[in-house]
Length: 341
Ligand code: AHG
Ligand code: MN
Ligand code: MN
View 1 (cartoon, helix red, strand yellow):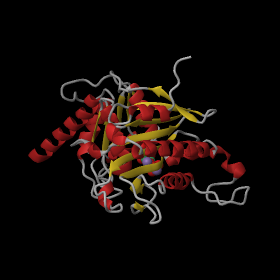
View 2: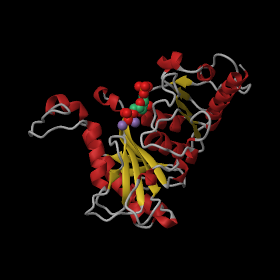
View 3: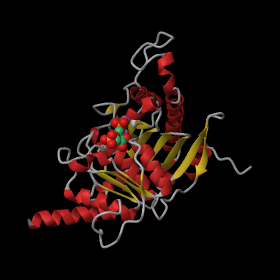
């Protein structure tokens, strides 16, 4: 039997120098929240028997929608520990303050409690995304500024994929590491150490039904990914297959393991696209760079965008560096053409 390394052991052995105690324990808290969410999402198919979300279950308790439930689990895991000064969640309009009765800590947590929630009812993989910043001000209780930081300043980011196995993948800036939940043991065990996005890439992922809503530059880029149309940067695209799940975490994870690019471009009537910068694009951009890839909004690195709003959206191209840079090249070319017209 090869060596079994639990996530607790790994975090302890690999914690950055500054990360004594508080930060390490924060990662444990998230891993524990992930196990609790896993337990509930894996029973989602029983809602018709045990009671529908939003309804009353057999115990007479009110059932929450799973994304609200996941939001609550993460909040409750983290509100009283003295490690956070503030949180921000997709499910909450405003920043989430640490209740007054609890000590405040030095980190800020941003999260998408349940990503791909439209897939829950059809038993397709879903996920949780998180990012951790240092609080801007050590004295004050959490403020909006603490979470409106560019993803380059993240001190850690990760996701949990509730798929055929439940996996937690994270980075603290020293590579990307993946852990698979052994449901019998209730432990995340190291299964993928130091993940690098492989070459050549295998997959491109984009919701093709939106083709007519994209600008000509995006359309030409997607044509290029599909091996049609003009050569970008005078290079033919590597031969790739299409895969699109509609859960960002699941699409991202597959492409991280096999190589590829995920695109959620701007649309004519949605110039900011759909993906949220703070708790979707930002943390995943941090991870992909740690794995040797790149993430862009089509113009600049996602890591450099300074958020101005909590629920700000951004176009997203994320995956193997060369594929994402090609998207930037197509969009630059489009801009030049428009300037000349
Ligand atoms: P969420 O469930 O957190 O709101 O996120 C859904 C997002 C993301 O997971 C996915 O990549 C995207 O929506 C899919 O959107 P389309 O259905 O428009 O392709
Ligand atoms: Mn999401
Ligand atoms: Mn969500």
